[in-house]
Image (cartoon, rainbow over all chains, first blue to last red; front, side, top):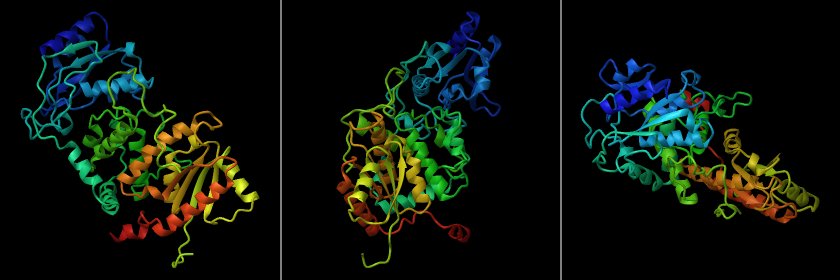
Length: 291
Length: 146
């Protein structure tokens, strides 16, 4: 913790940043994202297993209030660094415009309000089996190496369970799950990779995606969202955490990621130079479904 | 005709340069084919957003055909390659949420393949006829009833 604060102060002193985006303790004792805009703020910065939020969401270019702060330093875990790499890859930000404070991470909890120490019961599922204990995209790397979190890896269990269902059962399941959606678009707002200036879901002439929370709009929206994130989703789990209806959106994203991995051998990394699979093609791509 | 009176309505999104011309050839060659397909002409398969397919189903289509130039024949060099990746992923996602991906027929039909177009139309129509009407979306009245 002190190492992070000292580094933050040093960055301000050397005038390398105008603001640092990190985490602080909130009024209830949990953790929340915070901006340090002056050197005095640096003592508020914390980093621990409750720092769930993906701060890369704040640096997407549509958040102009963040861009107005000036040169930004940002605290990133390995998963957040993948989102930053995605934004660089897709020309949304420039690498030289941000200072990345990479954190060695031993996994985070499911909910930032959980105050107990990290244990197999409260660890976020995405952290179990996560192989990246530290980002490879960073300017400064902070903290001591941490062990991988313990816990039973159930990540793909639910996915294969759904895959083994009959199509009718799958449809019934998704009708129930997506039927809960109120189309609040929290999943989009929180997603670091959903940065379009004008989202297709907001278009009304014609309304490609119905805006009312009807099954039509809900299926159109969630299928489109998953497709637009295929090969881009960094698996930070923020959509699922933000969803007020507790729809397991990560399932759709992970399914898309699996498809992309199986078909195009692509997994999302924090290397901005690695091209994404959508927007690229190979002459010999599999086309078994095309007559 | 099958034993039911169900006639599927099928929307075909086709590219201007190959399949549309191929369908035109099928017509001028007086090939008989199922009359269930409504063609929507687009510049390229690369122009076909997956939302077009979703929208077709929302508006009452029972099946969709997507067709364009064969690989290496794209008028715009690479539109069909991009489309191929997009449809490959979309198709599997459809399957994952329980919508039968076979309701959507993907094919490459060139400008000279009038006969193949007729085959694609007939095969898709027969297949969708067997599936029956696409009834995934509840009607507003069913919503109120819940």
